[in-house]
Length: 444
View 1 (tube, one colour):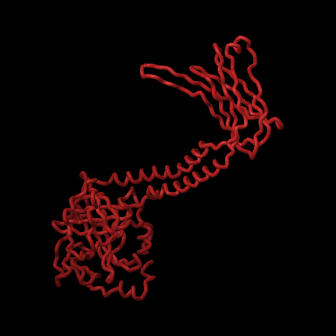
View 2: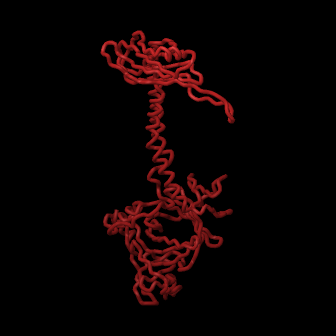
View 3: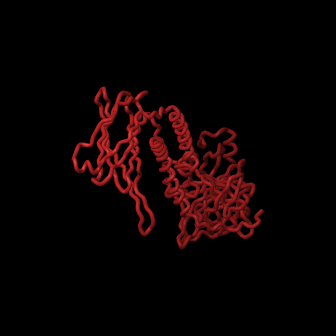
């Protein structure tokens, strides 16, 4: 909501009688918007810093021409609404830290409401925080180095650096100076941040919350679009959510799938409809070159359309047997053709005993209609001495854990991808952290 939508009471609170003054340095007109709260005023023309509490506006610091003037994105005197209350931009400062020889600067906008007091908007690389001073101090989190707690929330240390005021404009309720420095420490619990600024033995805490640039533009009815946010900011909420939020829906669906599996498994027939043991004479097959294929007796597949499980067990040892199968409907002639192999090998080498393969093979045929069926069986193996005994068993309507496993895997893919993206996002966030929390001592 903008200034035009303010109530009469809001207008009375937000539009006080502005006191007009003139800069003693350049003669430019000045406006004092925060009444007796103003301690220093910065001339918008010559950028001299003036003592707002002296009748003659004593010059405290003159603007150095070599310093580069910074243009605020929100003009001084601009009014808007935050948290349902009208605020006016009365001050602006640029602060700079130096990390490994590289300077990083951000902007701070001082907002004032005669009833609510002061708030701050900070901006760095298109990322904004809405902040205010704390009325009570955070506490060091017990047993966790580099963390503090406030109102039951734990904040993790992000960065500590010396912040230097490199440009100021407007009025401030403290004695602002270009070049003054504080030791600034940030503790984050996205989308919030606790900031500690210490000078000597004094320390001030504030709490900020991430606010999209578009919301700032809407609050102050600014023209155009806000600067595009670049990179991942310390308090920027992850667009992929927290790990709990990502996996919670999956866990609910997985539980529902488990219940469905239990219910359907309890209703499954698991009926053994055929079983027989056969012998394949490998030597005779080699000598006689006879067709080893045959058909089984007819068996009944009852119930609704369901799966059929075919198990082949063979007495193979360092050998194999392959079996070609065809499950054939006696009435319609519909056939399900497939081949299976059972092989088992074992031995010993320099690494010890080893085994490979299995003496059992299980094949699942999905969606077989009910009816009378028989198997056409065609065994095959390497020619050799002896015989291979193998058993063929057919079961009807057998629960398949593989299908449920595949379904579970399919459910896990979306949250898994989101979790990977969330992890990548957090890595980019914490890549900017220095990981060196200061000693807060017994601050009170």
